[in-house]
Length: 289
Image (cartoon, rainbow, N blue to C red; front, side, top):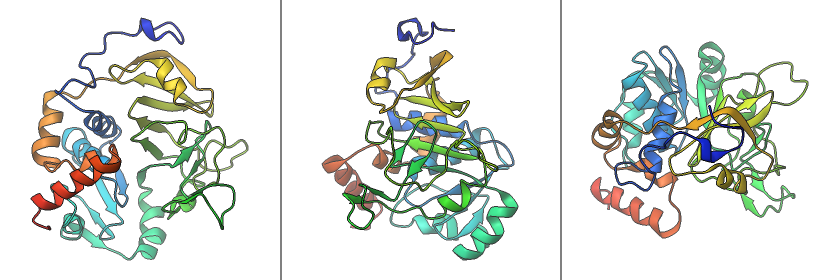
């Protein structure tokens, strides 16, 4: 245990995030993999390679009977293949156990299999309410239009098995007040569902204790004060705050050599020119350009 709120009393961190032995995207993937339990059905969204890599890693290492539903290909799959960009549809379409349209999937698969899902919020508050609609107060004239809510409003009011991930932790994302509501959190008086269970960012791992977000572990080379500075609300701290276990050698081998040899997972942690350069390199390796 560490003294409440004192990052200096944390145990040794092991490998540093800057250490070339592993990178922050690999740390996030490993954290995601440990949420996968045998027999789970996980929903895989569009353009979420960090989550895809983490779920596949979890299936290989911990949960061989886990299955996935995918908006890409609209299929239920048990098998997996290496991730990519130009031909990613074949991973899901070619391995589908069943194929359904989006409406049928939402009406038939969601209620029956109750899939778990990782969502990436553009904004999230201390209660786990989150926004993927727009930045700005005026819906018709937003500062930025976001991808949209998709099926999030259908799932989060009813179920208690949503999970969140944030590749780049900032006060913009961890906001005291969100601009629009697309995902329902731990709202007082809820009759069904229970809000998100878990969140992982590039700084640490979090849960919700008594409906309030709290940090449960810090990634290597991250101190608690940095997390607080990058969070736009008062963050609770678990009394047994610890260091996130680093990826082991087999995690790294599987991610780099079998699951995601093109490193598509890194696209979610990069921005600007670095992201464009990696995207071009992946497409070049796939023969798409």
